[in-house]
Image (tube, rainbow, N blue to C red; front, side):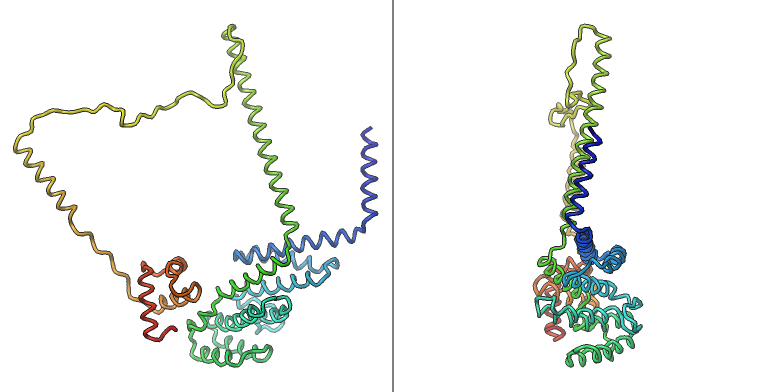
Length: 372
């Protein structure tokens, strides 16, 4: 009977293959796999895992060349991954994405971003991202000490992109003065660029869910974990039962009167008894104290009281404010807003300063017209 059953199932499988084109099934599976890799790349980008991102990107590039990958949505995801690859390597100036060796990663990212204008629903986000890419292309070069590269980046943008003239003039002055930590550059920092990219990814994934294969795999893992847990419980229960039966047989041989044993889920044997101090009987010693001993005890007690009443040692005053600390304070206010001193203290190390000290320093900077 069994061979007949297998033959019938094989016939059903062949009928199912004939009813649907295998190329169509391949296209669906390939699309799911590409979506899974896209979500994985977004996750690695958010967590800043560069090696994991590069490994997934290699597989994504190979799969994107498949003829089964068609459609505008897949093309957008491929373009977004190309953009993410350039941004995550933004501070690695030796990484090359273009044929022109002078085009650095963020410059290439700006070029790719201009092709995603129709994909971005929020026009203000598109403009902010463009400005961030322009500014950081110059800022990263200054940070690496490459002033000539920063100047060539400005010229490249003026030639190949719709570069705002006012922005170009401002960046040119910063490059000439080599102000690596200029407040304007700090306001359009690399961390702000990453946050803006993540905001774009969240909006895109919300409108274009790409987690079908991810959810299916998660359910499979959860079900397998439940099965493994159940198998462990059954194995432990069977071994416990075998041990109990062996001990019961042993007791029957030693004591024929005992007909059965009661199996207990938990042992009731008390290994160690904890006795609190409250149940101990007090021990009182009665001894006559002389006047001399009484005077000594009184003097020791008064000395202890005097030591306890001493003023506490003064806390070491923090060091003077430096330019580096001022820049961290400016960046923290840009990120969290004025008045969010507790949040700023969590993100940066101000060497023992409190939120009140940050507020006072901000007032000093405002009076000196160093911040607006």
